Amino acid sequence: MKKLTIYDLISMKRSGSKIVMLAAYDYPTAAMVDKAGIDLILVGDSVGMVVLGYNNPLPVTMDEMIYHSKAVVRGAKRALVVGDLPFMSYHVNVEDTIRNAGRFVKEAGVDAVKLEGGAEVAHKIEALVEVGIPVQGHIGLQPQRAFMSGGFKIQGKDAETAKKILKDALAIEKAGAFSVLLEFVAAEVSQRISNELKIPAIGIGSGPYCDGQSLVLQDLLGINENPPPFAKKYANLSQTMNTALGEYVREVREGAFPREENTIHMDREESKKFKDLPRE
Image 1 (cartoon, rainbow, N blue to C red):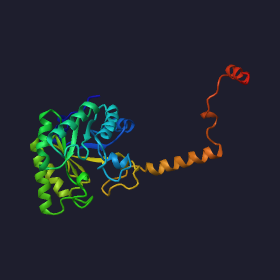
Image 2 (image 1 turned 120 degrees about the vertical axis):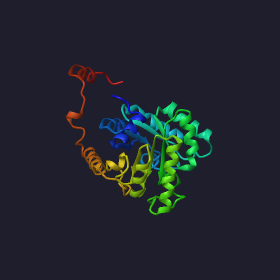
Image 3 (image 1 turned 45 degrees about the horizontal axis):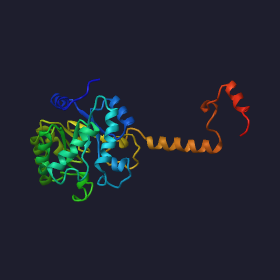
Image 4 (image 1 turned 90 degrees about the horizontal axis):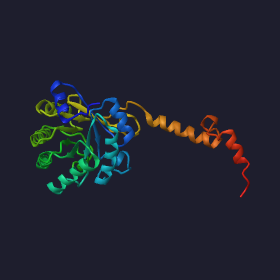
């Protein structure tokens, strides 16, 4: 199975083939996602809320991100794996940015890293690209800065803010990023960005005109009971899992599980020897 590269993704944009991206956080789901034909797997700092039980992504550490990224890398044979730089791992200076992105590549084995921000982080993107680390930008709604921008709200609803998002996208491309993630951006804005950029613009909640789409696996499968408004639930595994767990509890309490087919026995000769052992 051929491993995808950033050049494959750029070729997909040029040919008009839609890029499929999904956030996943462990080995078994990464293996399933990879087998399904997903092109990009994002190990997002959303792991904080989806898996670790935090109220927001801010508490997530580099060590936690590397731990989950290692598992995803082991499950992904074809998909390109992107590690999401967590809050305060790239905010202080360029040296910290390179050091932490380098940890992602060396320790976790990711193919690329992602960081939030527009023109103000362009110099950090340039520095990473210069040392050979592929970078995906992230603009529009930036969860690590959501409290500064009034919460998780749609971005680019007026011409002034839309202009800023476009300017950020162009700055990210100029800095050398191989793609940009547009989160919760008005469709008209994401359409123009997709048309103007030479690199892929991948949308999450940003309308149908992007070069690709991204979702969080738990939202797609219906495991997260409170998904964002832009997510589509392709299954309702939460209900299926609740039913199965309830059935398991009931059968154990009633003595209906395990049944004979779930039980392992000694062979007859060894069973007789065991029964005949004297009490100690």
